[in-house]
Image 1 (cartoon, protein in one colour):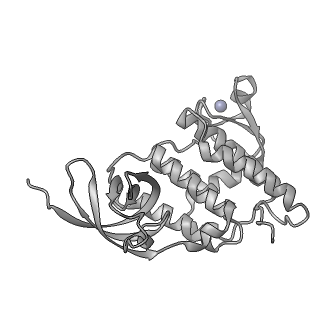
Image 2 (cartoon, protein in one colour):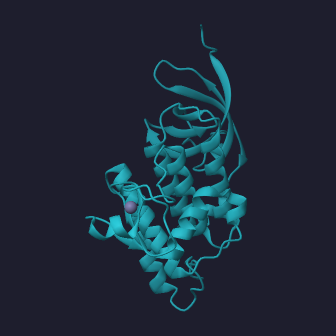
Image 3 (cartoon, helix red, strand yellow):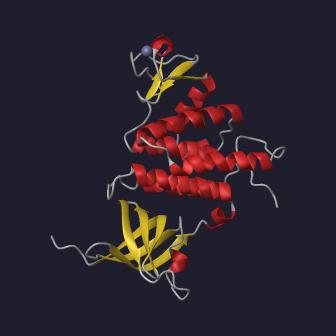
Length: 271
Ligand SMILES: [Zn+2]
């Protein structure tokens, strides 16, 4: 069947790569999956499209099919997420989320728009909510779920017995929690507190609107973050670049913001 030469789609800009003298290749997430397209002349100051194709912008596109890369002929942003650019920590969170999507989502894989909605929900969260990191933890769990890597948190990955309310173990290798009996003798596992297990299960099963009211004690959040990062790195089989940057950045910000810190989130220091 001949394909239409022109098509319309909504998209979120995941990554921009400069190309040639004035062009940019964009990695885009649409409700029907991920794809790349070229925006010609978009780095010229006179470009009318440029303002509508910024990083993380939600934008309506008119695209022409090209021989190698599709070509963006029109763009009109509907949500720009401008404020993310003025907050380094939130901006880095968004970069990290985009990197995870690029690494975990398959090209042109149609999931009925679930991933698109998930990222949109996170970008809105990062722009508006007091504690940006809780939204990111929720995003990580839901993304893993969508990509077929949901960690098993309700039953032991080894003996399949229901996980009971006590300190249990997490195995990145086996993809979930181990009961005390199985975990005590297993290699490469880490103990996980009851609170962290509860938070992981809660985040895995809830929608973003339900998670908004959640407040996490800093120690619990740090534990949940660390369990998830170990697991994600295992899934990706190499270190997530922006996660490493994020850890460094957060240490720096913590030093700067010592005394201003009230929860697991680190507020950007006022200058
Ligand atoms: Zn077991």
